[in-house]
Length: 192
Image (cartoon, rainbow, N blue to C red; front, side):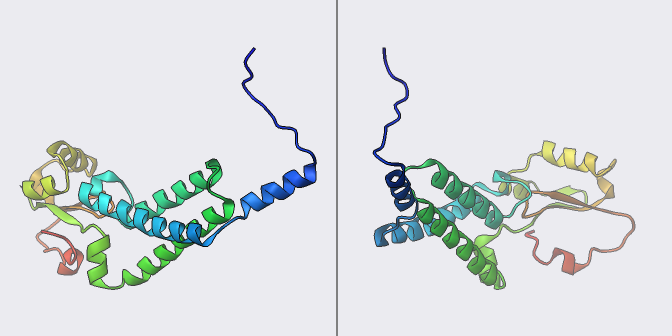
C-alpha cells in the first residue's frame, strides 16, 4: 500500500514552532538584493510588455496600474504558495513594489516620464472620417468601433465629432450637437 500523505512526528511542539518562525522571518543580504532587483525588473518588464502589446492588453487600467496589480498579485501568491520565499522576503518585495509605485507616481508629474510609462489617448475618428492607421496602431477593429458607436446611440456618422481611444482602453464618443469646435484643451494629449 502506497502512502499519499506522510506527517512527520516531531520531538517537541516548541521546536516545531521555533523552526516555523525562523523560516517565516528569515532573510539574508543576498535574498534582499535578489528581491529588490527582481521587483524592479518584473515591474519594468510588465510595463514594457503592455506598451509593446498595446492598450488592448488590459482594460480600464493604465499600464502603470496594471503592472502594480500584477506585481502585487504575483508577490502575494509566491509568498503564500512557495516554500522557498519567506514571509519577510515577500513583505519586503511588496514594500519595494509599493515604493517603486510611489516613486513612479511622483515622476508622472513630468511629461518625459509620462511618455515613457503611460499610453497616450489616440484619435480614431475625426468627424465622420475613420482613421484606420490609428485604429491599426491601437488594435481596434471596425467592429469594435461600430459597437461603441451603437452603444453611444450614434445613428449616422455625421453625428460624430470625434472618437478617442483612451489610455485605459475605453473608447469615448464626442457627439456633434451643433457646429461648436471641440476645445483644444480636451484634445491636448490625444495622438492624432
